[in-house]
Length: 160
Image (tube, rainbow, N blue to C red; front, side, top):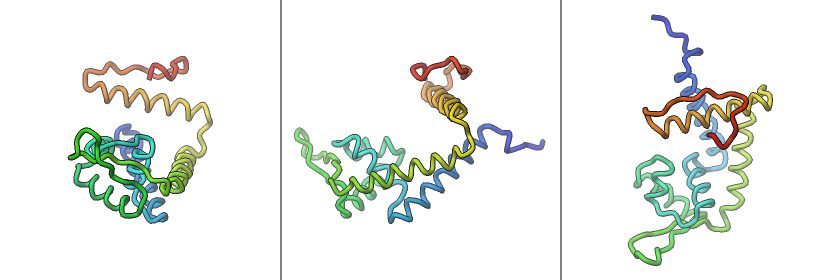
């Protein structure tokens, strides 16, 4: 059986995701960081007070992997660990002001990657892709019992 991989939705989606990760990795390395470190900085910046276990869950990595990445960012002076007020065994992660310029770089690189990926797509086509991806995300979060819905132009953002 011949499979046209360019027409296989799941394979094409995985290839696009992989190529996106490769591009983000390349750009992060140019700034002396890793894509994972970028992810940690973003999460800690917008969710100060996270514990490492929560961070590991958000990034879908093992807690020890998150701990090593946090160690590097702490050593670089970009985040800090603070003892939890109720449980001294827990360390909460907080961004340091020195992280702000890195966040600006990350945001600029995110926008450039988005522009690269969507080059040639009209604004309405970008909107359709975004709605479709949101529906796919909801379907996956609901699990195998999800009833997939068609994405149409009359659907609004709230339904995703």
